[in-house]
Image (cartoon, rainbow, N blue to C red; front, side, top):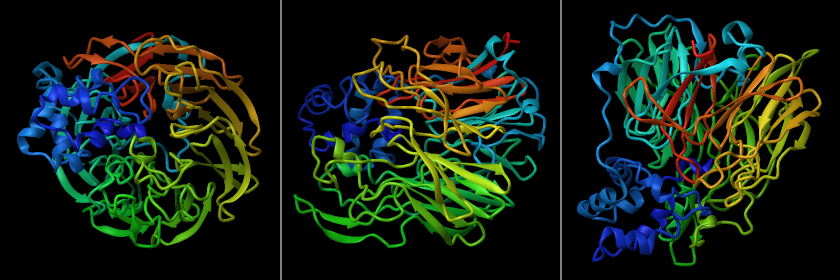
Length: 596
């Protein structure tokens, strides 16, 4: 998941000492190029990816975004000089023809796919709502493509409600599109990038989402007008990567943070002071009802690092993904990440259960102990790395909640070590079974979670991304939730993109399942459909190509990493393109049977 922030990551570690007596080109070559080489170990974007970003996007990152720690040491002229050297000219604007010709009808409050998933995070779409089956899925063809202007990554998962599609973009744009044609009803500009799936509530009248600076927004679903905006967490490096959940008028917001990433690679940075949390907001006005931290203790000074900079802890335990809501127990379940600094805590690499009403911690179940990690561990300067050798086994998902019958239930979650756990939510997370399905490592193991059908079977993609070994990793596995037994495993096909920078067979993306068919994207840009009886691939589409777009913006697909397919009314929607060490892109694609 740290590749989410690969954009300019290694540049941050090197840029602090750039001598501006040099030209920007010479400075980049001497200080930064090694970190941005192919198969770099820190997930930094390749130079060709940087060149696809608008210079204003890079400048924003230096001034107010993830590169602020470095940008603050530079003069305004220096920041602009670097941005213009690295980036492109202004991004292409959408023509008037991209907008829907008629006045937008009011959003109907009938939800087809609302937010990241259902409350239990099953990512299962019933047959009637899906409009697809094993017989029709092999006939899927591209109906239309939409190009996100001015970005090189397409992080967002769309939501489809009442015939309208809502999706966020890496530059902070949020779009309301016609779900059938892809024409644009309205666009809203958030302060920072939006990778969360928008949630539609208030009887179809409001759209809720978070951004990569920790802000939560409510918009009018019909017009895109701002209703309210609040900052969910006060830490300067707090971000929202996981989608919000909405229930009974409350928004449950997962908080993650960048304290571990770019900042930690600088030995002069006081690492680290961020701690993850869940925040409950009143959906009507954004008022904070409670905030439950994943670490009880407030970070405090713990000493000094080897260059004399003060160190802090405990820290980290970010919540990367959308919470799982247990409406039966009135509990919120979240998966947590590593500690960013020492000392390690008992709540890292764990599932935590909070009371929905009060935010009180009900129980926690830790899977890996003594796990402290930050970006310095993979950088040339490891001053702020808290542990050697590293572990890095955090959870990029909050788990799937499913009934097993006989009043028994299971919460299934997987982590970056490649382990899948089945735990009992009714017995404080007691481990029912566990199984190792992947090799594991910094880039997963497993990453963003699976899906589970009504037959009690979970489908989980395998990452095992390995820099310099594009044929390594990937695969889809089916697991019986009652026992943890492997039913089948389908290895990843050999990537067709071998030789292309960023190509890999890894499949860290989330799974979506309908009766009889599981859909999973891949780092090599392919979106595949698997029949669920034995795992045979029945449809395969390569998204890593150029597409004519319905909005007049050049569209190109790339790697599918944290992005999940959405299936509604016979249409499969997916975003494609992931910057960092993967293949960039800016496409939203819609597939229908025979392209109709």
